[in-house]
Image 1 (cartoon, rainbow, N blue to C red):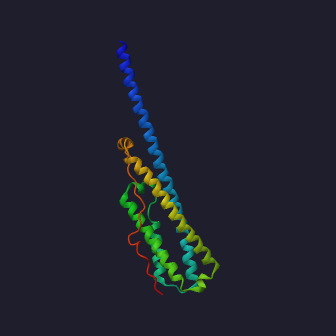
Image 2 (image 1 turned 45 degrees about the horizontal axis):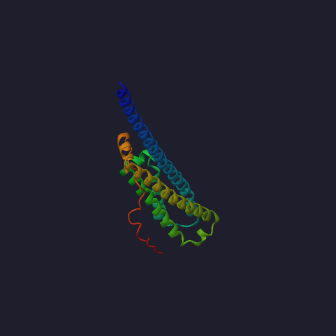
Image 3 (image 1 turned 180 degrees about the horizontal axis):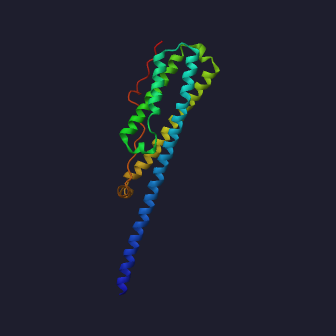
Length: 197
């Protein structure tokens, strides 16, 4: 009879250890997943800031110079495309939608870069305080976006590594945790932009 209770104690102890391990691993994954979500929220915040600055920048440019219409149209179209996309954390669970979002943001960045290059031809525009302030804010926002994307990729790396590491990968598989995509460079970004005046 004594051996029976010892056997039950061992089984209960093993089950208890497994439950504690599972809870610890699960909580660690949840914590890492929330870190990814928090970094994603910061990226959304920075993209929204950029999106809010663009109409003011475009209106300032329109008001000061007879500007190249195709450049302004490209900025407005790219901003509109980005603005029409849903930006919730579910986007992180769909790699194809994430890539579309990333491409749209890349197109907007490219259009803004072209706008800034073309502005160089208009010294009277560069001299206005309003434009200078908007340009400075936009440059600061672009820097924030770069930092936020880097921080996001670091959080994704930590999360994805935990998903693939033994023994946490067993808990991840049982609990339905999925890998998250990284932000990657936009196709063609390895080439320097061509500047023509």
